[in-house]
Image (tube, rainbow, N blue to C red; front, top):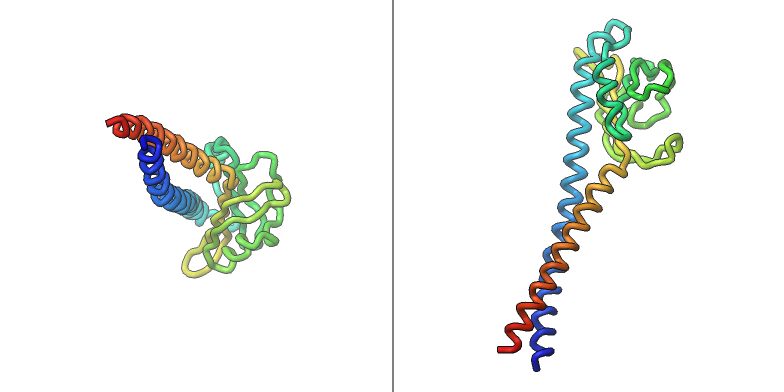
Length: 187
């Protein structure tokens, strides 16, 4: 009798945890992806604003300290291109300026005046990337584009840590329900 009572407590607890934890985890993952993309878009928009005057004049933007700071972010990268799609600033120190980025779909979209965001696989880095690309424009004329990328592993790590936390909390709840259920079953 005691075991049946305990089994019923644990069954109710497990069903409740499944109904609550899975949607919570999925919602968190979606919100975290949106938050990271908003942060990346914010960075791209700020860099575009800082680059506008230099690109309008056909020069290189003075982003040295910003690029150095960004290069310290693990895997994060900023690329600023002119109206022809050639890089004029890059947070990756080993990258040569003047590289052609017109074959990147997000850069091509930004050079046409559209904002682009999403994820794609980089054959060069052999990794999946989250990206946001924004046009650098004034008075309706596009002078260049800014692309900010982060490896998807950054997002995946955050989501994985959240799932581990939810699973640990669920295990704790099951242990507590088992102990309380045993005590109640004895009564």
